[in-house]
Length: 198
Image 1 (cartoon, rainbow, N blue to C red):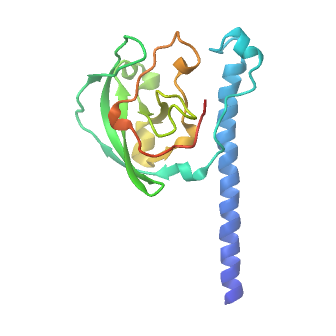
Image 2 (spheres, rainbow, N blue to C red; image 1 turned 90 degrees about the vertical axis):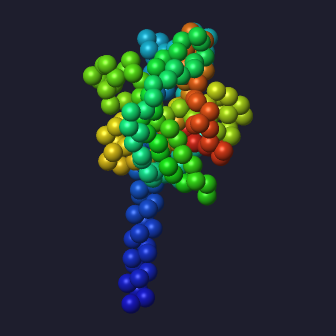
Image 3 (cartoon, rainbow, N blue to C red; image 1 turned 120 degrees about the vertical axis):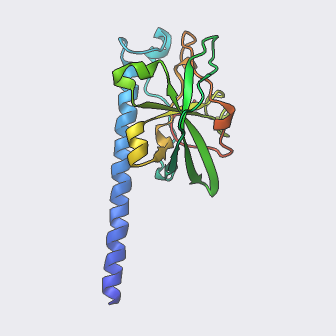
């Protein structure tokens, strides 16, 4: 009996280790694809002198604890508003829903937004935007916050927030870009030590 129990625990542990390794490879593959865009002279937003010594963006180590299940609550007929940006541009968004989750022992929530202009493009009709700020901003990450993305289908089927995919807005790397500023309601009173760093 004891042998059987030990075998079950051993299998579960090895399965968890395999799942973690597989997950890390998945996230790393995504990061490599982003770095390839930055490293390519034809697609990069970096200046020539920055591109010359570019070897990849800095990231926090992949940490599966920052991939958290969430409860998604749809907002029906959310009121359209103009989201502030780093320039005078004011793109129109509407609240699409809320994500409720627990991280580091804290109950947290994030608003999910839908861009009205992108909604007109069939390729982005399902696209959802999750800008946020946290306690790493101005220290190890950009002071203006970072972004996550999702889709309506993903949130309906399996609402998960994965901060390992958090990225900086393009205006961090080039002043020619106009980037949305995360609304105050999307500030998290925790340090999100996952995703891209400065």
